[in-house]
Length: 223
Image (cartoon, rainbow, N blue to C red):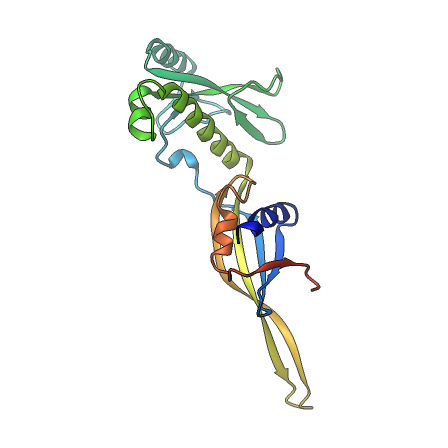
């Protein structure tokens, strides 16, 4: 089934709906939708911490939102510690918001909205293969990942998937006795909380295929 994963991911990214069939002729449908009530990833068990200044661009973790003066005092304290890595978080706001760890180069609609930081002990304790020698490299990779996922949440790039099987129902008129068939799509599975639009990487495709036979193949709707 591995060969179908990338094709499914590409088609769902474009159409948000895919039809399939198995070797017995059973038909299936996979649909992708937005997750309108996603979990805030900053409420997960993160390794890093995000602090910011109170205001419109407040992206801080709980308890790490400060007044401007207190924020700069906290930043100076963090930067003095050689066992702590601190990076500024940049935001761009124009018909929405997006964040990242490199400047946007727009002096009007972007700027620093906070700081992400982590200390050596946390990295070595929480991240696999982190050592005294490579902890800074591991820390930066983790910072990039946590900001990427947080940005997906801010931008609304969180998705769900629903899987349907087609039922062909035979109907009979009680008056004429005529017979006909109609089709209904019965939902057989659903799952939400997939962050990012790479549906193969974020696990959405694997989840969708779990409830389908191994021999399914993609078809056009009219097949």
